[in-house]
Length: 470
Image (cartoon, rainbow, N blue to C red):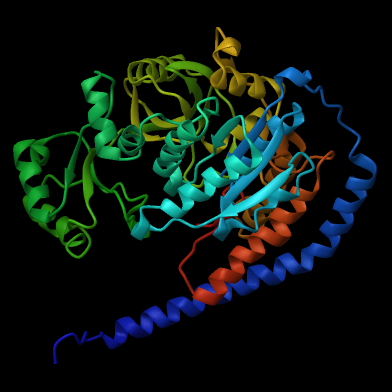
């Protein structure tokens, strides 16, 4: 009978057991957060009653204040951008996808209103999301639009910018002018091709959609006889087991075929990979706020796989690379890049671009220099002659509940835990505005966990930085 799919019984059982395991994990996490909630609530209430006047805010003069729409508030970086502007006296409106209606940012005392807009829908080209964001802008008569984009909203946010220009040409937007450029920046192979055109250093790469293409690349590029280390890097969707898999493509022909067998059921037109040169070295994330190709804010952070804590470092070569790229492409918006510094040569290679703010923007701690950089990017008369840069001595940033989880999972010792708390700063907690901290840990994350419990979807960690499960 046509149309009937024969399911492998063992595979079906494995999928069922997997769903139950992720449900059990979610239930355990919910119970632990519920157990900690009373203590955290008492602490937060005391801080709110006695500590909310602990910080004095220097508001801008009335003529410099704007009504600002900020989107993408599930992540801590969105909260930081919004609060930075609110502390300066701007009227801040928040809007986010319906699936993130539980965002902790809406409980900040620096926020005026919070809206939800329709979730993304490929069937209508995300039109409902775009119209929803434009409608909020109309209702609130905004002056600025700053999307702190989710990964999946970057292109749509560029379209929002175009629509807002039709509604009111006076509205300033901190995002890319052309949705096509946003799509290129968000596509690893296309971005790397742009870098090659600009003679900016990137590792060797070649997009492949089949095992036959891998064999062809290996033959043409002499990978089998090369001393360089090449590996297969997944694009989208990313198989979890291959996300951090840097196994070298073997030079021996027999081992090469065994290596390819691992990818036989994975690598296809719907799930392409890159044949990618492996650079052994330190990884860095570079975050920039840019206006018409000119940097307004810039800093570099040592990178990590999970991005759940941040430091600041100086790296002139990376800054030079970013300046050249942004100037050549006339970038406007928040943008971040990932780099590798070769251990042997010291040269830096850009490996990826994300056309949105990086989470390491939390290292600014909502200080006035970040507001000045945003203002310089939004309005030409306030453009900074040199970008605002963070000192390398900036405080280490962490998320308390992530650190507690690392301690409970024996990923760090009690000494390291105490050292982090004594010498760093929580990314969300602030005595003058404590409720987002409580709501992130005891409302937003439990809602995410409850959704995982109901669906049984796969997840690895509770990422308090992203405000969701990953």
